[in-house]
Length: 383
Ligand SMILES: Cc1cc2nc3c(=O)[nH]c(=O)nc-3n(C[C@H](O)[C@H](O)[C@H](O)COP(=O)(O)OP(=O)(O)OC[C@H]3O[C@@H](n4cnc5c(N)ncnc54)[C@H](O)[C@@H]3O)c2cc1C
Image (cartoon, rainbow, N blue to C red; front, top):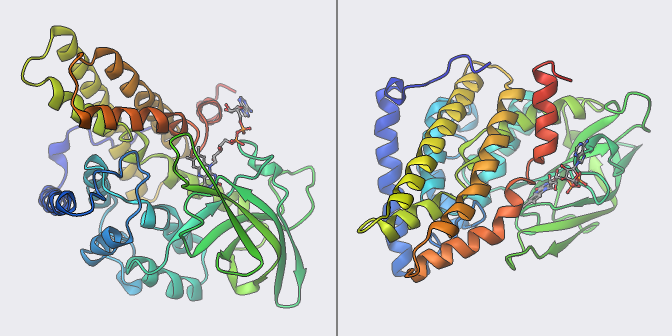
């Protein structure tokens, strides 16, 4: 496990350090500009902010689809370079939601399983920030137990007729397409057989999108209904019936990145700002502990990026990073809330309050703690 561990960040190639500086300067400039105008960057912490304008600027820099082949307009750059870009934009609290899913997992899914026509059609559009994707896995009665999904499709001439519903679908109200896991054969003894992945055009008139409000008052996720939606054969990703294997491969990308432990990073930054002129012993100790924990998580996450780079499928390692990372980001606002001084800045209170309202989602989205621990236990041969 964790082969190719990059324990010492100084072993990263020079190009990565130069890139980090470039991204940091770019985001800082954007942050300053936005503070002077509509404030879109500062309001976008906890991986939830969306700004198509910001995504387009990142795309123009070549930082969307940056690891994908040049043949499709990608940058052909390394996973470690992508890691640096994602880390810098998340640490700054930049609004990344528009392109996040397409860049992180839909594009890689097409590259691995998609047809040549799908690669040529979708990848250049994602890279230019012209098309955004949602993930359609969870259903009202199927979340952790994904193999029990009921959304189904029947074969018709030239395609499939899709019926059913997906829930908690992040960004479906803003995105163009959703990669949707669908039952295309009745459930058999092999629960993982007979599932397929479809590209659903979210502007289809037989698709209904109904927003759901979360605890913080945002409306970032939705329930999506399919009523006889026609899916042409060309919009099936990979082989019909191979959906389970494809989804498992996709989750490797979904679970290991810095978004799994940086969601509460802005709270730590604002806490340090708040106490830096006169910290107590206890506050210094807390900052030290949280920073040490962060550095360890980061090294584990970088090692997963190195494994992806070498073509491995780090399912167990990704689950481990997500479980430890999510536990950490739940702890940060709680410990900082207890350690904060009586006198607080408005900015600190704002950041902390928003984080507390978003924090319950950290350990749910992308797979719950209990499910990840099952993956880890099975991977280690403990179950
Ligand atoms: C902010 C946010 C965004 C999301 N975005 C998306 C999205 O874009 N697309 C999408 O498809 N989904 C999305 N989800 C859904 C998410 O993936 C599910 O909420 C998650 O997988 C859990 O499923 P569930 O809500 O049905 O809970 P359930 O599966 O019903 O679980 C309820 C509880 O039971 C526990 N549990 C379940 N099974 C077991 C078991 N076998 N052993 C031990 N404990 C168990 C769980 O850990 C959990 O604590 C999002 C969720 C959130 C919070």
